[in-house]
Length: 310
Ligand code: SF4
Ligand code: SF4
Image (cartoon, rainbow, N blue to C red):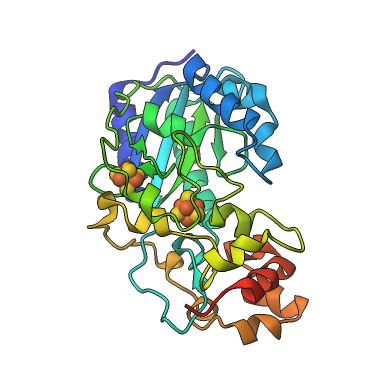
């Protein structure tokens, strides 16, 4: 197995920075540790994944990255800041920051494909970029690779940069020197638990997706949501940022330099009337390159009809 030098490792990190990534770290592609597997299994057993049935599948792949790429030696963890420079006006229905601009899957895939190609050329090893495209424990790997820690709000927090970042991984057969895992924690802060409008973070451990507005508004496509949701969502129609907005690690978040993540005109002017009047064609055209397209018009309409003007 080729073993690239530290120079190549530094070069990969420098290329990642040139592509705009805010963090890049390496972890040895060993199976996920037993404690993390047990925590995840417990979360599933309690049914906290709610409507996200996909979270229960591919247990073996989720545990062992070498099943995603034969001979995998390293998981490269990458983070890209999406904190917006410009916010929606108060007249617009609320969209979570992650969905303001161009679909992050497209943006990350482009950048990660470029980085993968560079790595393959430099190391003559195989790579597999993953952007929500493979069952991989991305926050676990990010923590192992030293780029951040998992906060009580379940987000990866990059020290000094906050949590408004997309994550991606490149699994590779290149053996790269692993970084020190991040050992920071939230300490005794519990602001996100208090700030959550629906009590999804009340118990220790991972969020309860049956109560998380972000999961319910984005992942749940039922015709109706439980009655209590209408009283909790306010003007939100896509996702919820409350447990990140209150986090002290985001107090000094710096706006992203990725122009693609700037809010689109449709997001800046989104109203209930606009959504109600949309045809399927309008929806597809308006959100063709937006993560909002993944919601479907039916779900966006349901959310808009449920919301309260406050
Ligand atoms: S996204 Fe919103 S509803 Fe979900 S845990 Fe965070 S604050 Fe609570
Ligand atoms: S608000 Fe406090 S407890 Fe919650 S994720 Fe941020 S630091 Fe951790």
